[in-house]
Image (cartoon, rainbow, N blue to C red; front, side, top):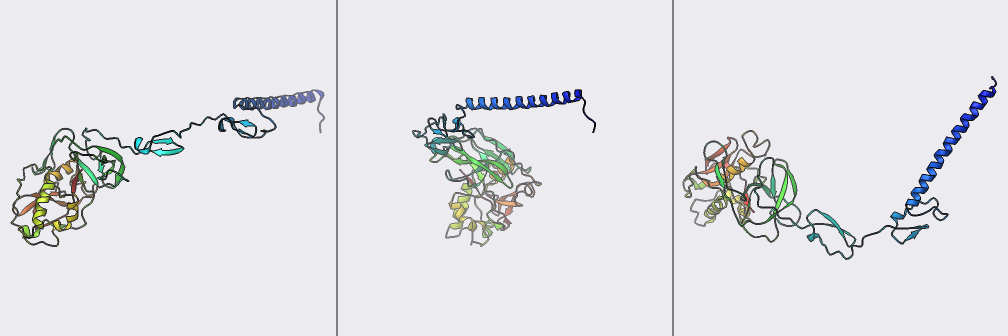
Length: 343
């Protein structure tokens, strides 16, 4: 091996010395920085806390642990008086050492909600408890009167009136339906009084079968409504009228058939649900832009549904989604049944 010259040995020594100096500078800088951090945290390293990871900011003020005196201030909330019902629904607060989720309902305004296929609202008829969706809202009586038509045969006209003295409601949460999509859930304020504001369509048929309107009532109907007349808001009245005929012991419209829809919906009618009138069906179809091409694929609706509106002594109107307009069938024909309500 070739022996290093004197010059080479000097250069090597200088290089080693420089490396040692750089390492010393790095170590010294690190120590200074750590000491400054320790000082900033309010304590100095001592034999009592050497190697400790405790920091005074994380120790309660006035408490000493391992030679480190805490300086963390904690707000005492024991004198707080707020309860869940005092805090807006869904908001979080802390009082008396507890986490509190607000339950106070904030009433919505009386501005028209502009219901549509992209602006969906659901109804929870119960003012309290967990969300339980009862149907989709298709008409709002707040705001100005609204007229329109669904279909093109002149039978699907409707006018949604404007009401005053309405109940108060609040947003209870959010819900996603497989057909109508995601929307806010509206519920009445507990203890509220006033007129019903919303019309609600059930999300499902009463069952999976078709039913007669009233099989033996053919030729006997007596509550005829002109096919050009708007009867929005008459669904409950129509339902009560026909249901009374059904329950009349003298059977003025004929004997019951086991497949008549009225025998199927007695409990629901008692609970305030009704068969929608033809104009209420039209308002529902118009609100969501229901057509012959999307009634089934998008909204999961069946071909046609009975209304509670009569056409003549033989027929009742129906919502014919297969054809895209309001039509009529004889009462001994069969259609699907879906109910509506107000709240």
